[in-house]
Length: 583
Image (cartoon, rainbow, N blue to C red; front, side, top):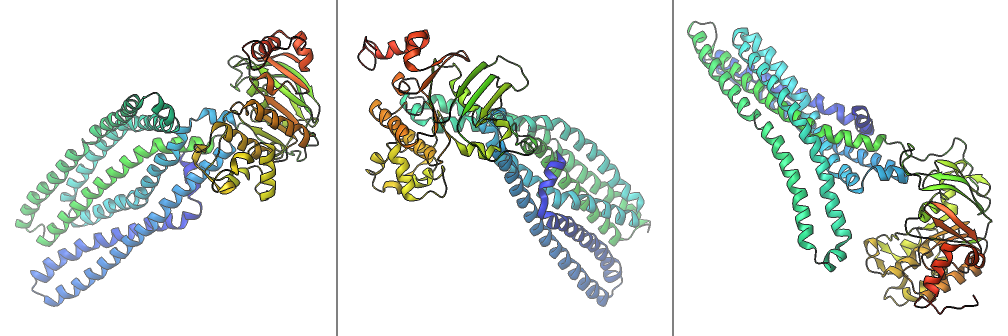
């Protein structure tokens, strides 16, 4: 974990090294001043030498300025190193997330990834800054002050040593007991973010069902869980304050009492006692700062572990050693395919012994009951998941032999959940082809029957789409997504129930455009409506993860019970159209 985080320091190694060096310089300057102060008292004031006071005062001023410069330099370099680390951590996580397969994304929830990219990374940034500033400065200050104090009086300095040992033991046990609470609190942050994300995404449903009070209560519960976790941790950390204060004041009183006696017996000078008291405060304040650093490290350890999990997560899908870059055609073959979402082989298979062959340019309908694995079936074509048994071939080769970028460029998928991004309509369309001209974008929209509503908008193709496409209807969103997919000029086009929100007349126009304009593109059309697939060359009928039928619509109507039942329920009396007995 530490190694994973440390690798992300990268180009910020120089300021990361410079910061503790500056802190040591500041410590040396600070530890020199009490010695000079003691000499001013003993040799300048009691010795009656004004020249010595002035001379030593100038030296003290120079040392103080040097310490100030070192402190400012340490702050600047520390800030640069810590913010740079945070930047690299976010980049490393985001880069790896972009390489994740669907199985990896299923492993991490969206809210958990958001927390790791924000709250956890900020914790690491703050902790790293404190480590650079104080983890070097505080121990160095304690060690140097101890050496200086023991050089003045080993007897009085043993008071510091005893106090440091006692506080060290307390810090160890308190930090150990609070670690589990800091680890658990970030899981509660995930739940809080999940609550907010779900509420914002589904705000229209929340308003429609008047569930604002319920959502407020759910959020309040998640926030309360975080509060209680932090409260438990802080209650344990609160022990350190009184113990620290007791140690500080006990040490000062003990040193003052013993020191006064030693001054009377001439074993110690007044200036030396002043220096010892200053070192006492330095040691104990440094220990207090070190305690704060330990708290920060304890809190950030849980964050570091969560961030390392994302960075170290191996993508579930990888390119082969010598991937094939060219997809010759859009032919598809499923050869005894089995698939289960749990790659370890546990759980029930979603697809079971699936076999079929499709020629390039064919139009294939996919129909079946909800939960029959229609979407899972087509997701294997573009290798969004890998099969757990058998093979899927595109263009005569196993999809695992292809470069994934090349394969997915050749396969356009309009998913069941359509997503548009913030930006203009042109911006969204060019997700299909970033170099597409305005004319190509308009042509794709003509084929998807999207141009008819785009041209009615005030800004046309430059109309801004809000996040998630909330300012367009479901049918408009579907047509924009189809146009975006067409711009890829794919060899295989997959429409996963992508015309469910458009009327039957527009659906028919889109399918006619496919037949006439992209005849060489293999088309897989998943639909609930028979009318959306009845003019396909062949139809796959799915049932409980198996292919129950695969034939032309006419033959399925005669031979396949499931297809005939769906057809009769939609085309019969009370269905989408009049029942034609001859058909």
